[in-house]
Every structure is written in C-alpha cells, then in structure tokens.
Image (cartoon, rainbow over all chains, first blue to last red; front, side, top):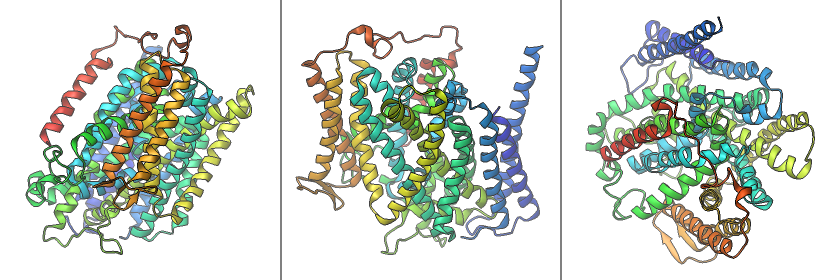
Length: 69
Length: 550
C-alpha cells in the first residue's frame, strides 16, 4: 500500500471541509482572539497538500506501470 | 471549550482512516516477523517520520507547550542540544551494529554482544517502562479531555485505546508505523496554524522579546549561572546531562524509536532513518514550543487572555496548548487541532505497544517460556501480547489516577534505566574489551547509583528519602545530575570489571563491535542518500538555529 494515497485523501477531505466552513460559515463559532478566516487559509493549505500527495502517488504508479511494460 | 458538529465529523473521519489503514494492511501479515518487525520492508521516508512520531505523544506535545510557557526558548535544548546530535550519532555510528547484527530488538542485540543476563535485565525493565509510559499517556489524555471538553474520563480512555488496539492488532508494526506518519502530518498541519496565529498576535518574535524577560527568549546567554535562567540549570549539567547522557540514552538505546529504523528495507535506509528524521525534528520547536512562549506573552497583553490556573492558584502549564486552541481556532480547525492531539496520543501509545509486544514475544516468551515453537505460534503470541499490552496500559492509566506523582516517578525511572544503558552500549559497540560481566555489573550499579543519588538529594521538595546531602535548585537539574552520575558509574564499573574478566574472542563479535564490523559505504548512492553530506547539512542548520536563538 502506498501511504500517500490514504494520507492524500484524508487531507483532501479535511481541506474541503475547512474550505467549506471558511466560505459558507466564516463566522460560526468564531475564535475570540482572531478575526482572520483561518478555516479558509488552513483548508486551502490542507487541500493543496492532499492533492500533492495524491499526485505523487499517481506518478509513482505510472512509473511502475512503465517499468513493467 | 465546546465542539461543533463539524469538529466531530473531522474526528470521525480520522478514526475511519486509521482503522482503514490497519484493515488494508492485515493481509500482509503472514509471519511473526511481518507482525513484529515489519519484515524489514518499510520505505525510508516512512521510517524517518515514524521515528520522530513515536516520540511525539500527547504528554510530549502538551508538555512541550507548557515548558515553553514555563522555561521559554531554553526548552528547545531538548531538540537542538539533545535529540538532533543523538539522532545523528545513532544513524552514523550505532545503526550499522543494530541493523547489521540482524537482531530483532535492542535486548536481543545485548544478548548477542554480551549474554543472557544483560538481555533479561534490559527486556524486563523496558517492558515495564513501556506499559507505564503508555498508561500514563492515556491518563494524561483522558484527564485533559475531561478538563477541557468535559468528556467522560472512562469513555475517552477506553475508546482511544480500543482504536489503537484495533489497528495494531490487524496490521502489527507496519500498521503502527504507517499510522504514525499520518499522525505526524496531522500534528504538523493541526498545530502549525496555532503557532502562526499566536506568535502573530503577540507581535512576532520581536513582540514576544519585548514582553518577556530576556532569559525566556535566549537559549544560551543565561546559562552561566543556574540563578540566571528559568530552568535553574548550569551549563555543564545541561550539556552533559541533557545534551549527552539523557538524549543519547533515549534516542540511541530506547527500542521504541530504534525499532522504527530497524524496520527499514536496507542498511542504507536504516542509517538514513534518524538522519532524515532530524530535518523535521529540528523545526518542531516552532510548532510545539513557540505557542507556549507566545501564550505567556499574550497573557501580558490587554487581550483578555490569561494563563490557565490550577485549583491552588498556580499556573496550569499543561492546559496552555488547549486554552490557546480555544482562543484561536474556530469550529472546523478546532476539530483538526483536537484530532491532532488524539493522533499524538495514539502514535505514542501504538509505539509503546508495538515495542512491548516485540520485546515480550522475542526476548521473554521465546527466550524463557517456550523456545523452539513454530513461527505461527509466535505470531499468535504477538497478537495476544498486543491485547494484553493495551489492557495493562489501561490498568496503568487507572493506577496513575490514584497517585498524582507517578509521572515524576516514571521520568525518574527513565533516567535511572536509560542513562547507564547508554554507557553499556557505548562500551559494548566501541570497545571490544568490554565483557559480559563488566556490562552487567556496570548496568546494575549504574542504576543503583541513580536511585541512591535521588534518595540522598532533594529538589523542589522531592527526593531525599535517605538523607539530604545536596539541594538542587530545580527538579530538571536534579534529573540531569542523576543521569550524569548513573552514566559515569556504569562506565567506570564496566571498564574496571572488564579489565579483570575474560573478553570474548574477536571472531564471536564480528558484526557487533566497531573495528570488527565492516561498515558499508554505498559508493553508487547519490549525494543526498549518503550519511556524510546529510549530516553536514543538519549540523549547519543546527548551528544556525543555536546562534539565532542564543
């Protein structure tokens, strides 16, 4: 099992959830000491990281296929 | 602090993924070697991250943030003076013997190099330590979740233990290691925003420096006298006690972390495991310590934030991390932060349980209870031991609820056991004249010296059961000096006894001792795959960090 696949999916899903919170509910349960939309920024970073891991795993699979043929 | 439904969704998603990884890996377990040692088949990037994640338990995470608020940037010495040099030493000098000897555990290496009694001493003491360590971590997490979120202690402890049990039972060490990597990534992703937000709110590093006393923001400048720095430790105690004995003792001999490197798929990968691990490890203080320092600065600003207090009115440093999360994380990110906290607990507990089941199965059961059984039998024993290990950990967690000073005791036991053990390994690996009797005598008397030092000195009203011949200014200083004395005693006694007893013939120690072992040099490897260039890069970065925060 390529660990980048489950890790990539996990961070992609969490990133989407946070992005959704940041876009659609930026003021729900807001934190007392920050006015920044931290869900939006953190969600974006996690989504990008998740996609990066999935892309790396996909590239490794393609390489393996090429070397097998 | 109150969680929103979205926070529970993120927590549930995480549990589903860790269990899914365990379920997926169950098919790859066909022998005791697969279950207990991963069949030595794990890629190096995974073993490297697992190597540092196994040490990143909830107690460490919460404790480091608390220490940041209590001691300031000096806390980073645990990383920049202690862990990183020790990990470099482990990768360059010690891993060739661990991996090359084909030992399945640290106690087994001791048996190969010395004899059965030295292995037994280490196996039993390590098994007991891991169970208590795991139980106390569980207790700390249950207590924290109860205090911060109002969750039921029993439910928190039993549910989190059940999840760790499920994925380690299914996929063994490989499952624990794979999950540790996911947990490590989650810890970084979950706590990095807290560091950025809290430090930013405090006005950046310059703002923190302007609000705190200078000895809280300088790691080296106030080390001249113990009265000048918040840890109340002098430079020799810090460098020799923490930087050398305790850190090297932990990172180079504790099977909990060594096991991750031994699971690598080649000798080269095993050596690079701690070396690559140093790169993320040296930047962890920015995520785990800096928020604690920022919390102290924030408490001095007019923001309505104050350090959490204990019932007696003193600061409760253990709650610094969670109160900061409550101040900076909205619903959603709060769920990620809480999940990261749970992940840290699980990575620490799984590390302890997988180390325990390997040592019990190979070094206790196979050696003393039933040698020579078919491998299938040891696989079953490994699985049963995993269940027993988790049950014993739960029992230890409940024991901890009855004794409020048990964590201090455990920390002391670590010092008493690991510090002399490092002297035994140092001599065993690098001086072929060291004999089995010398090692055992040194180890036993070194441990005894540690206990006697505690019993005859005091610090913060602790210790001094027999007499009080010296009073340390802090428990930290006392711990460092206990380690120094234990190490020195073990070293001297081992050398003295070895000189008057008969050493083993060189032929029997090939692959186990420096000078009798061919250390591999992979000439075809790319530069970044060789230990030497990696070490140079790490040392340069380490020097820069120490100079910057001097």
